[in-house]
Length: 567
Image (cartoon, rainbow, N blue to C red; front, side, top):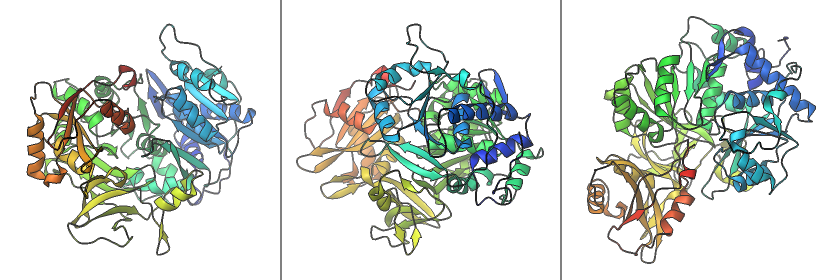
């Protein structure tokens, strides 16, 4: 790689991830950057692949501000495409790989990408989307495992795009953008817009907080830290898909440190393969998605898989329920690991951290991060113990929502001249910086004039013996306006009744917070990131005729269609 003068060589006020990764590749060219399915890709080779793909993108007219849609599960090609887009100032667009054709078409119409990269196994969705909206001018197809009758799909082989001569490194600015499309309470995707420098600033603690180093202030400092052989090497395994911020940002952070990113060989989450990968590759930093991922992992470990996961030093989750019992079970297998439960969102943060280093840290209580505050609806601080308010954050944050100034102004208010981000998460103040999570305000159940936060009820449900998973929501009711409704997954043979569940919740919470309707299901069909599609769940529930009773009603509810389950 040729050295290119960069405005960020002296300081990090103009940080750009491509510039940083280029510098890291020069510093540690022979170190393994990505390890996947029997292949080791060094930093030098990784940079060259991205530079060749960047040249192909430029040859097809892409440049600063162009969008590149990545419709893919975790693969080395995903990361290569991301790097190539960064190299030319283009904007990568994360697309949920579980989308069907209509959903993909909607996102393509919203983001208007100039290029689309996808694996052949998802050709059906791309073909369907192509009948609804025009596909981008450049479509690249990654060869992956497909069923025998899978269509070839439109586009040029991804491998052919790497035949171009490498694009020389360019001087890049800090204001190039990164889109993070996220679902919302409306179900319609919306893009949170980060700039490179704001995202990097927001990640400094996550990158360097666990290392015995000062936070770098220059690009030279960043590369010196990455090249140091005396520091513990970061080996990162993201189990949620990189289409979600938690996995993507942690992978990007690992690359800043000159670490190695490990990918599982298939799209479908396989807990046994994950445990084997931790042992085989000496994974130090494991990215999970709360109970949805940790539950199957500890089941494998508890079953006597014989795997050694003592290499783990950090296990991170963000924005998902991660119950104390699963934290305790995991820490028993990885006693040297620090479990970090991050209260964050695609809109910004982090707002709080729950940190567990051993059994003595349980029950886990989140503590406000530096720059986070709790505000009342009138945007004044909430300090009294026991009072409730909304989380807000005053640090580095996104520009807002793409093409949505009204929602941006609502979520990113300016208070006393300082910009805050407030996605709408409610908490109860516990004192000394600790808070109790209550849930997202948009999901609050208003029952008979009382407000119930689903997260508070879910926490109690998940603590009940025999309850494996649970979601709480509000359903319309002619008498109460809404009734608290619980959808619960129980362990085989648990034998829990609706009355028992209601009674147990009633012992811990006020009576109006008890579920008035209860559904027992085989599974909640969570996404690879651990999220539940609430709109689809509501449809499943409302298709079952339920009497409007105050007493709990148990109704059978068929498991989700297998096609909707995690790949």
